[in-house]
Length: 293
Ligand code: PAF
Image 1 (tube, rainbow, N blue to C red):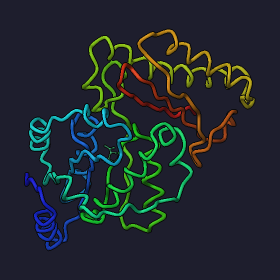
Image 2: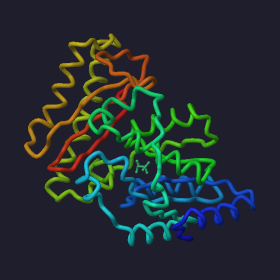
Image 3: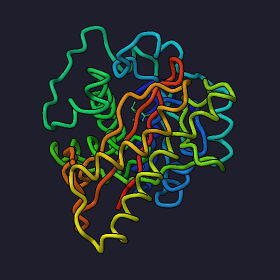
């Protein structure tokens, strides 16, 4: 595997790939790689002639300095894992390579998704994500790029971004990878103590309880739409699991219509919905989501 630390070495590598008419798959990451990243990478390796992974902890997407400082950094084992999976190249740029001194922020303003849920709770986060993804797409010009459903709102924003700016890259979404107990894999899990990791299982339990209760309601009431009062009641039942655990602080638990990412307070069984949850366990922020019908 080639390790490319500069834009010029990246360009030399890309020229080699393009000369051979190679189809390029790209997996952007912030490192601290886990099975979730490896599943994105193995999909890319399977689909494309060349796979490039980037590891760059993008300061612009962290709205809190402490969060940036405590973000796990495991570059040695990341490189080992990338070699083992036969990734072709790792782009590992420095801050000055990605943001030059006089960098001017572009104002991206193409979606209401910037300002809700993660966007509301972490002001500037998605602007930072889109800025860095735009830069990386410009540099690499991949044929396909891989993103996980775990960061569901990010995935939708990237899809809209590519559509809005007519970028010639196909966005491939990949299912969330979970550990044997159901916890969605996340780099941030590396900062959880064992008892906190146990508490974190309540995210998926809450989501699954809601999904189960929505489908029970559908069965019991023969497809009658789930009205506002009923949905509030089911959400309360699910959220009790979180509230009962003193280690967890709920940030949000919301349901959106998958098609347009608008909040909903009822369920019409002809549509698709997604429940999204965010919590703090100590200082560690965790998110998860599930499709609910
Ligand atoms: O999902 C992530 O790890 C990051 O937000 C991304 C897409 C690599 C941009 O920094």
